[in-house]
Length: 308
Ligand code: FAD
Image (cartoon, rainbow, N blue to C red; front, top):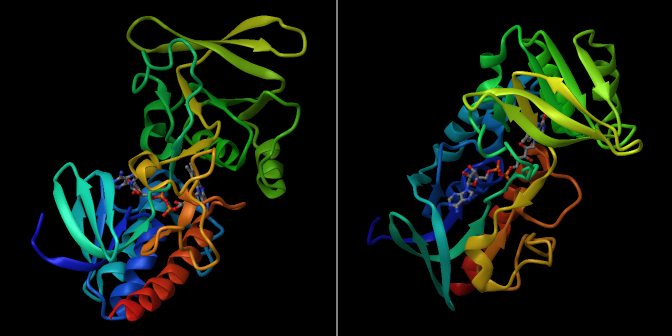
């Protein structure tokens, strides 16, 4: 915590927040980035990124490191803290964290999203003991083992392929009969001899021996037949929820909890902007978060010029 008043506080140091910090500090504004964890956001949970221009392929944590260096090169500061609330006092805002409060003239919310859980029995019990939401973080524990991946979107398929590089076998469980993932990912996954797909399949329960996962009980949603699949790991990729609970007092979200902005990333509260995955939008990717961050950099600058 500090007595210093910032021009801008950026909440969240994922690709969106780091890009906003880069643009804003390069415009000579005083910028503080706050994050409850290590900078990089979801990129830290991503094995390989192949669709960020300029890199044919880059590991998520490596891209995080490069973006952090860019973001801080013009003086943007970085501090730990979980943001609990923003108080809007008109021209001045107070950002309240578990480590203290900060005063600023504007705020960029870049808190992203978090994994949806399956909500089945055994998921909490075996969290960190076979149940995971991050292949990059936990994949190495499953070398030469059998893991199941739950989901059918880009994340499920991409991370399933990453796991296939470590595990003996990867079984993808999907509740429909076709994947939602991009075609190029589907083609690669279907061609991977270590990957198997079970369609119309939903997890009913995660099973274990009290210490670690031993398998999953699944049901075929067409035939209603239940069966058990033996597996040592369960990786869950069934969607995401926005992280907007700390901002509920501002009434800037839609019914789903996503923040609504205009094309300039401005919310309905003057001086409060939102970017990246936390926003209501169609495509949630590193490139789109970065694009939002650049636009917010410009919009916040113009907002502050009018205040001066
Ligand atoms: P995030 O990256 O989610 O960053 C948000 C940050 O806010 C986090 O660091 C978090 O700690 C912080 N935060 C949250 N709440 C608080 C709080 N209350 N106080 C303080 N800090 C807070 N995209 C691609 O382009 N290509 C890919 O190949 C790709 N693969 C992916 C694979 C997986 C498994 C996943 C999960 C995502 C993948 N994505 C990929 C999507 C991409 O990672 C996201 O779209 C992108 O990271 C969103 O950036 P963001 O800055 O909006 O949010």
